[in-house]
Length: 163
Image (cartoon, rainbow, N blue to C red; front, side, top):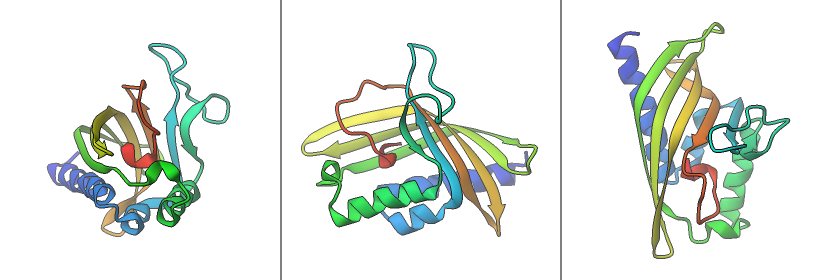
């Protein structure tokens, strides 16, 4: 993997974090392909989590970008009570590992940490994420985001912008 490719992918994912923190939902959604899958599995035990979202429980599962679009619609229209008011978030990402996939896409594994503040309370989420990226022009589209939440005992409603 060339250092230039590593840098470009880092900048792409930093931008994703920035757009989510700024609540620039249109630009954020545009990073995802129409057929992108978003999966946050549920833990089955202390050390294993569900792997098939169609057979096991998931905390969040969207089979396509339409699921994210629906959440954004609910946020914008006030139909998601858990988002009134929206929390302030700060996303961090690091320890990127990049591999080429047989289908020509890239697989990017990363560690992540999100701080959020809402209604006078600050909390955090952290874990691992695996992204599948498909080249599009001089950038990429996210075709899959698989997130493992390591602190799965949480005191709030969990949503895509926490991850």
